[in-house]
Image (cartoon, rainbow, N blue to C red; front, side, top):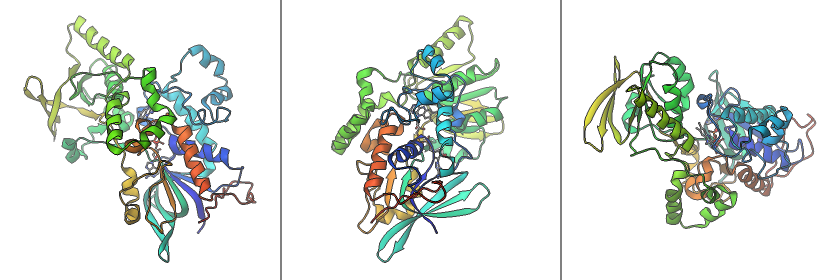
Length: 435
Ligand SMILES: Cc1cc2nc3c(=O)[nH]c(=O)nc-3n(C[C@H](O)[C@H](O)[C@H](O)COP(=O)(O)OP(=O)(O)OC[C@H]3O[C@@H](n4cnc5c(N)ncnc54)[C@H](O)[C@@H]3O)c2cc1C
């Protein structure tokens, strides 16, 4: 079986940026990298591509600019290629729509089509032993038609994003299609077009976007925004605070002792969690104001409400709501419940579970490599699940370009040097790891 120099699991922005960084670091056709992506083609959070949604970071934090502004994979080069650069300048914004940014990412991903196996979900990673050592990794994936595919690699980079975080009381109701997470919003909203009464649970950017999207859908839908928080606070993206997303800040966070890192995360949590953009909050406030002017009660903002219990009933999903301020308890029924309750970042642990005797508690080095026991030779790198050690930028686009430079340098430093270009004109890329 062919042994790949590096396999990437997931082909979202993180591993796409890695593909770009590797391509620019190694002469054409002399690197063996393959990415495995479960979606049938490239798509960036496709079920949250709402008509009005905008980026929350500057377009300059694209796949390449902060590493190499002269890269051909920059957002500006994409605009130039699409003949929209001048028009974009006239928009006078740093924040394109998410639709446009998705199109940019897709444009970049298309240039790596031969290096990505789409429609395959990696299900586990197994150790491949030689004597007393683990020499290679065996990556097992399932194709859309149920076939199991196996590949060998010397190095692995996981960029699998987050998994829907579901509040405890909804876990037993997983089979009820009327309850769904924001990560599957658009496909479910289409199915629940006729829903009259909808609850949106959460207080972050997605909750705010979905509340507005649903409230504007038609004149009959009634939407409750249910939050445990006292109010909706805006994300802080003021310039000094924004410095925590600078790539250099990762060095600072990583160098601190664990309790200090935890305190830093807590102090700056409001830059990213339970904190929508101010403009969105103002729109929601205006909607409620206009409702007051019209003496209406169609939509409700149920702040300081805890969901004590949830039940699937024939006539709707029943939520037992506890008003934490007044102490009052009420039962409300909904045709659909949307959980805008965020993401867990622990998918790597389940995929790598068969390797856990060698990886301990999945501690990560500054260069994103997982620490491993002696005799474990493959390099395993992780993107997007290092917030506790590398800081709040880790789950975002902010450090993509620089982080993937660090990972590609680490891969190359592991002896990932090239061999002469393959006879197939460079379609198959070879990356040799010397151990
Ligand atoms: C709606 C939304 C909007 C956002 N907007 C912004 C923004 O404006 N700015 C910002 O900085 N951040 C934003 N984020 C944060 C987001 O995490 C990053 O933008 C970015 O998507 C991270 O890229 P990633 O590749 O690490 O993860 P993802 O984009 O989640 O990509 C992971 C990929 O791995 C694939 N995958 C997962 N498991 C497997 C498996 N077992 N086998 C094969 N493939 C697998 C998935 O299908 C997916 O394509 C947003 C997040 C959401 C949910």
